[in-house]
Length: 120
Image (cartoon, rainbow, N blue to C red; front, side, top):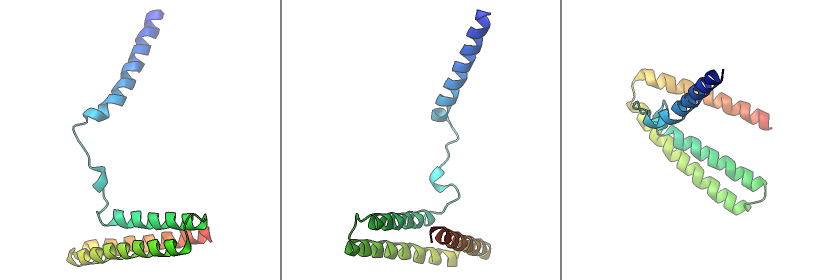
C-alpha cells in the first residue's frame, strides 16, 4: 500500500514540475504583444487609461486643477496624433478591413456609453 502512495505522489510531483517548467522550454514562442491588436490601438488605450488615472487623482485631490488640465491636454493631443496616424493607415487598407474597423469603433462607442451610464 505504501508503494502505491509513493508512486502516486511521485506522479503528482512530476506532473506539477512538468507544468511549471514546460513554458520555459516552449519552442512555439508566441508574441503576445501583437496577438490580434494593432500597435496603434494599444497606446491609445493606454493613454485613455492614463487620463482615467489622472481624473481619479484629481478627484482625490492629489493634483491641482492646473496640473490636471495641462496633463489631460497633453494626453488628448497625444491620443489625437495616434488616431490621426490610424486614419492614414485606414485609407491604405483594403475595403474589407475598413468595414471591420468601423464596426469595431461603433462597438467601442457603445461600450463607452454604457460605461458612462454606469458611472453617472
